[in-house]
Length: 230
Ligand code: C5P
Image 1 (cartoon, helix red, strand yellow):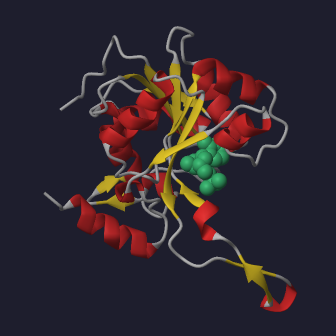
Image 2 (spheres, rainbow, N blue to C red; image 1 turned 30 degrees about the horizontal axis):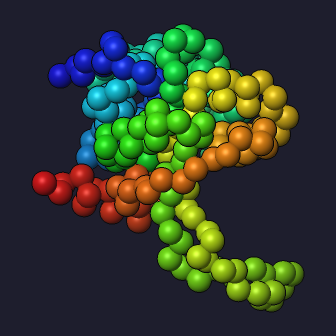
């Protein structure tokens, strides 16, 4: 069933999925890897569309796949699909250009975090709505982290109480994200990183174990189990 987005919502969600080598079919990139017989991107978009304040979803796809991705997502929700760019950052910028100025909150999400609950999407959006310019969902770091040098020699143990593992969606006031992208010079920095560089405070909110990034074979096994939970 096609989900109805909230026409009065104040949130746009951008999903860059235009990585090199993206192609439809088996053996493709992670956004199209199958989980319970459906591409990760489909799972991700279904959950984004179920978040109650989402008015618009913009997916950046490889130019040659725009029509195919549009057709794949049409049964899920009314998703805007644009051609991405050469780098992830450019794909996010191009997706952002499709968002009208009156939508005040923009979230950047990762299709590989396909089981991200709609509630997490809402909690990030709510934190931005509450006045924070930039918000990222995080989990505490559970492993001991060592800093190492050449030859794998340990230099020291990092104080993990000050570390966080960052998930998506990352949420921003529309103007804050637009300004950070306009000023961006390092294509490798993530969206929150660009905003940090612009001197804007970025605030952490609690993430979710369900928002894990599904990339390794073990993640897929875990995701197959999680998706079957009642
Ligand atoms: O290649 P990498 O893992 O860094 O890509 C991260 C995300 O950014 C992927 O979802 C990929 O499809 C997306 N991407 C993009 N446009 C690019 C490169 C990557 O949308 N030109």
